[in-house]
Length: 301
Image (cartoon, rainbow, N blue to C red):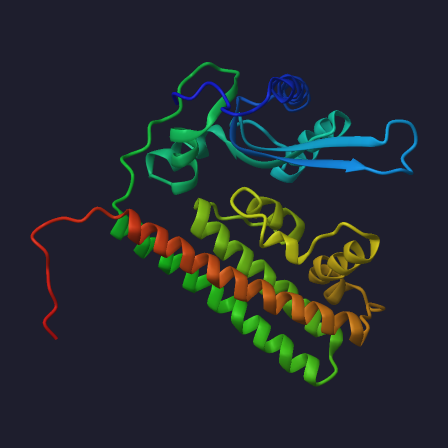
């Protein structure tokens, strides 16, 4: 890993990042922390009715971390993620975290796992507790091989997403609102997993839609805007969908109104259509980056 700095990150945010890493290290005791992305939301506001200074500016950074733990770590990955996230909130920033144990990370690198190999090549090591190098990944896949791999991953997952949406429409037409929401949850989950696999090569195992959307934010804000969660109403709407995975199965008193069901059906349909466009965009990008070699092969048919 050659990168040692996060380009374009202002000094103030670098200082904040240093504090955050120190807090995570003391709370989690990781072996390594690697940053594989960041983004900053800035809100500038002016109003005659602000108290005090009429101009307000807020900066909210989000950092994407791969946290590598030792092989003896007993805590579940989600526990480590929650502990690390708790260190970020008091500092006014957010984190999206993926956790792997050291041995698993090295094996993934040796096998050429696309996600961790890219993180190895382009990420920034923020903390190196054991000072030992990670295994070096093999050379990057040729574009035709990568395109074929991505295509297979996409169609396996996204075809399931479309089937769940089709089932959801059938349930809605029959007035089975609760089953509709469950199928919509499954549709979104599979669509998110499919597009995450396409863009970063990571295979999430969570059923938490909020976490899946956070992972998508690394490469797209557009998909996430379908569920903005900026107001109580929007948050409640999203939570209805997100909790359906467990509520629809285990809560005997679980009910969803026809109005909410109809809105979510529309949102999920929009998300799937947009995800498909993002897949096409990725394939076009890979095709355009493929070098032209001679002699050409011409199909005469």
